[in-house]
Picture 1: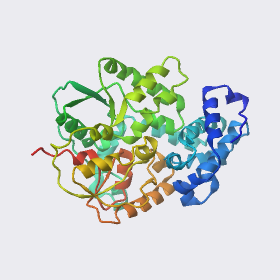
Picture 2 (picture 1 turned 90 degrees about the vertical axis):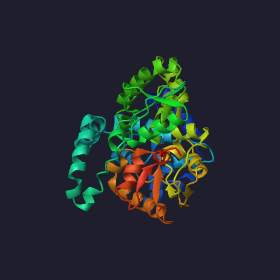
Picture 3 (picture 1 turned 45 degrees about the vertical axis):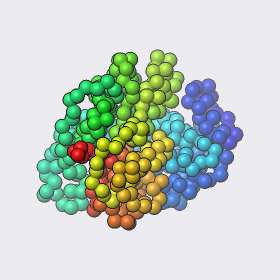
Picture 4 (picture 1 turned 180 degrees about the horizontal axis):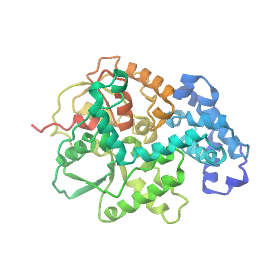
Length: 402
């Protein structure tokens, strides 16, 4: 695609990156075939090709409108289009650049600004956990429609206290410890059995995705720098990897190098942190799991978009579960998003709800006993509408050794 970027961006790192991405697009339209919002809404501007046109116009100096903002907001950033694209267009990175530009050029309504600001602060604060605890206390007396929105408590098993020669860092996450503390505890217990110690670094907080998804790009970069500073001494001391139990966080941290590429003080460190980051499934795929014995169950696995499209790890968890003896039932259209997408399910509730309903119909079609996934957002979103229990896959491996 031929393009002539406007003066405000053409000589910047973002501008050069955007131009390279735009030039790779040949407008074939294959991306629309796997875009959830295009399939649902049927509007060219709610598909990747149409959004690329909108972003190209904006980056060339045309004044964007609230309509442009709406079409970019409705993108799930699932990156299914990247998996489909024969030209390797890095759409996910382009839409992040486009969103940062449009946030500077189109002012949102006061109500939108207040809601987004409140979400940014609430989801990362102790108030989230406190509010969730109160909701769980009231859960038995809530109407069914509200009860399903409050996830049940998941007690965490005790974490191991042993030290091992092999050490990896664990990002605890911001909402996951309150929503499902059993995930990280199970990950620590499973890796302990494999001779790997998981070390949490308290100073490392949110991965930065919440700020980034809500348009606070400078705040996101500041959080990324704080995480790098927190992890760096451990990395220098020999930590061999940074393990992610939430695939959404993993996709974000693996992008640190790109997100701080124009920061001379952090670019090299950010690239190194990104290279050290591994999804939990990558660690276990290389491990000897012969000592694990699990109860055979019929499972429908939902691969989060951040795992299969963002990190390009399609089939890795499924291979682990199959190797351990679980029966994985077929799931149609497993490449499509469930509608969670971070805060998308809050800000775009109607679209998210329709995508969840379709996804659950396909996950439950072959009678699984459990639905397993690899991201806390997908897990919570699906569970709020599912008659079948939804769990993180690592908890299935945390069973007593025989």
